[in-house]
Length: 188
View 1 (tube, rainbow, N blue to C red):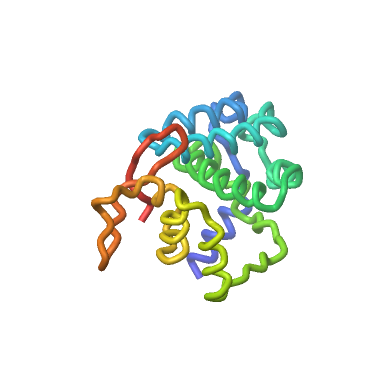
View 2 (spheres, rainbow, N blue to C red; view 1 turned 135 degrees about the vertical axis):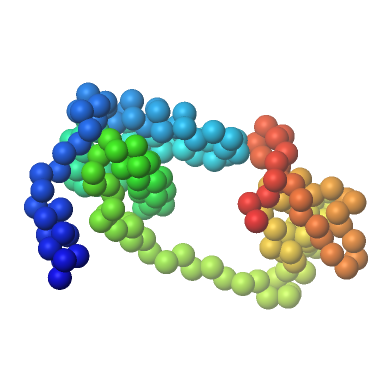
């Protein structure tokens, strides 16, 4: 009963944002948030910057304290389902950080559902289709196509795979390649 009473009090209390959040625009907040994300892998950093760019183009001038779920929805509506879901996911984390920094009380993304998209139909090649594909491949790419088909490695993991990590019994993935030739650690 006490928990319900306290929750009711919190819900009816005026939502007060930090005074800085009144002056801080979404664009300025997201710039600070990006600065706080140190030691990101290059692809992750590019993805964060892409999401920030999409968001700033739509609501960058809105004061952080005034951002509502409708603002966020407007950002999502301007993009394809895949991009909208990526924006939603990253903004949810960014606004969660704004809550931790006590700039806002409530995350405007918390109740926004992912954008529904039609299921992607993916087929599985039959052994004869795999054989026909590999027979059509040039010798230069046949090895990497074979490894891709039979290991399930990501593209960057395949590109960063040195010969010494491949044996008849196993494949050891300890690095990944990214655009620009940067070699880093794999995701998992």
